[in-house]
Length: 263
Image (cartoon, rainbow, N blue to C red; front, top):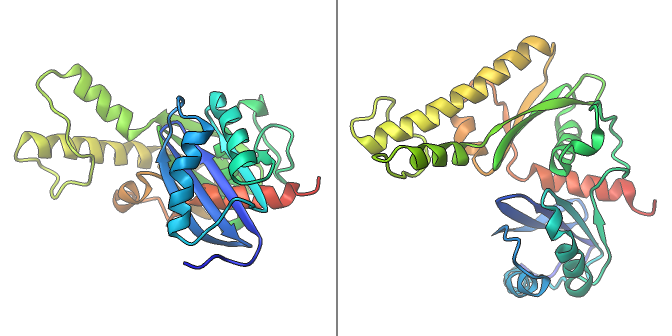
């Protein structure tokens, strides 16, 4: 891909397990990169990893027009601040309490809501209207409701499918680790198949059980949007997920940057 000529915005979503980097040319996402999140990495190490990956896509981001960061890992804020300044050539904008979101936060303590959840809520409302539910499959699985008035109404937090599976492997001595995926059949004919069926269909049951209750409490729910690492896999078995947007958070980061630019 040749270097774009428009305004380049770097968006960064720092999660507990993975960090996703995206590059927007105007309102068009032109490239994205996913790295594992490691609290011991320095800004120089991240720069050494990222710049060749962007260069392979024909992108020179040494003088980006903007950088916006959402992070749920506070110890890494200083690392990404330095990365933005020294490798992307600009001061970063961090998603944090007090920024302009254009969304009322109906939470007892708004500052407790993870930045990624607000970013996702902003993006989902923009793309699908409201009321809408966002299900984010990450280290934890979160369900967030944007009500009919377009307000962030609150959410639900459950253990993620990966850490749920790890708990099983850790505490059952004779059960071994298997790939987490949709099995070929419901009834396993060997130990691996039985574990995969239990993990996959058990988790789909958790997700759909919560979504069924939300449908009962939220009249006129327009959409249920899945995002995050296992979104497509779980959505395949769900009766209630209507849309899959793996990079929903990047959309929200761009929207929030635009709403706060020049403020």
